[in-house]
Length: 175
Image (cartoon, rainbow, N blue to C red; front, side, top):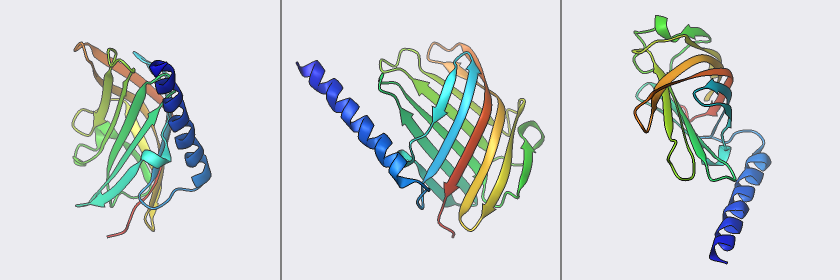
């Protein structure tokens, strides 16, 4: 009986969170959305919940932090750090080593945590990864991203995913 109540409670909370996400429609201040498809050592689709996202612009960096959860109990998060003054355009991570504050990180774990994996890409460890900023003005930033992300699993095995159809949008408070 306790297990049934826990499952029902989780499903109810998840349902409310996803409903609120849909009701918000456009993003509010300090909120973000990240979506992508990925394949390789792990595969799937990621869609963040706006309700559990945050965006902060501080010390010349925009940090976008998002999360998602599924009814199976798995969870994932995606974090993006981009220089606040980045102009519209496409950036190849391997070619922008001067932008030390640029990074994209993705992590996922099952309910048990036994198959947790983390992937990252930054301007110091460049691979075939790029992002495009389509807007960065008036407290809003939007763009796309694609390419290979590298990392490790909880058993220290090297892992890699290929990201396609990556999109991000966020609203932040101007300094």
